Amino acid sequence: MLSVMSCGTDSDCVKDDFLGSYTGTSKCTGEDEMSVNAEVTEASGNSVAINIDGEVAELRIDGCNVEIPETTIDFLGNPVTSFGEGELNGNTLTINQTINFIGVTTNCNVTLRK
Image 1: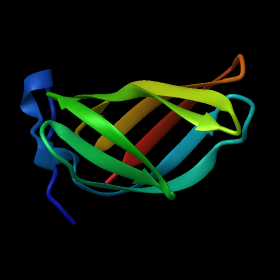
Image 2: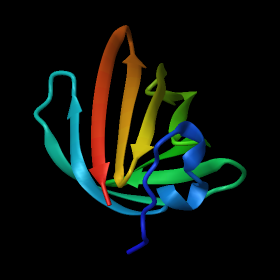
Image 3: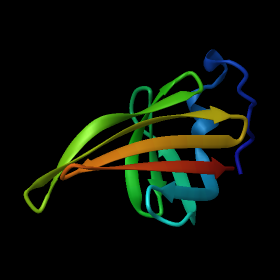
Image 4: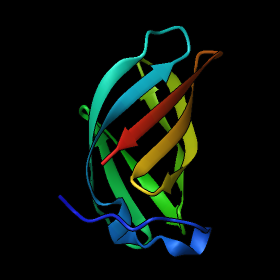
C-alpha cells in the first residue's frame, strides 16, 4: 500500500497521492448504496485513470481537486454524456458524477478510502 500525504490546500496534492487501491461506496439516483473497489493508475500529463469495478474514467488533477472531463458516447443510437468532479482529502477520494441519457439525469456520489 502507498503512503498517503494529507492534503490541506489544493496545491498540497501531487499525482502520486492519488495512485493506489481504494474501497468504498457508490450511491446513484434511484439506486441503493453499494460497495465498490477502485484502482487509480498512472495516465499521461496531469491525469490518472480510475477503474471502479470495471468502469474506467479519466480524472484530471488540479492540486487535490479532480475533474472528469465531459464525454459523450453512443449507446444504441442515443448519446450518453457524463462529467464530474471531486477531491482527495487525506486518504479519502470523493467523486460526484452526472450522467445524462435520453433526457434522464443520474447523479452518482462515490466515496473511496485507501
